[in-house]
Image 1 (cartoon, helix red, strand yellow):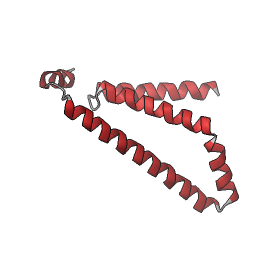
Image 2 (tube, one colour):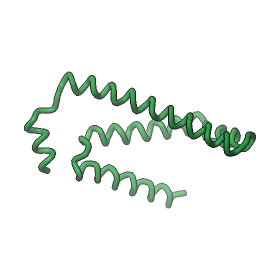
Image 3 (cartoon, helix red, strand yellow):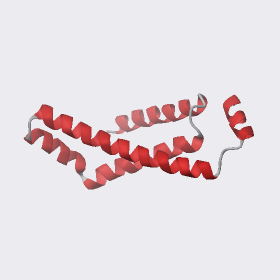
Length: 108
């Protein structure tokens, strides 16, 4: 549905802008988050996992199956984000942000 796409893009861009405007994330953090989000969406679409999960819930007890699917997706997301944060910490320790750049970013 094109209206859903436009609404989601507006919401996405608003969230990205607010993270930068409030200086709670660096620009590369916001861009990497967008890349990870798009990549995970493409993986879900390419693997056809969404219909498989819906069929799993329909074939089993809905409450139990829905909870199980929710937990599995949550754990997968947690592991992915934890690995990315670990990798970014390694990268940032090798090349820290200069103090002047950090001050300039916080001031705006």
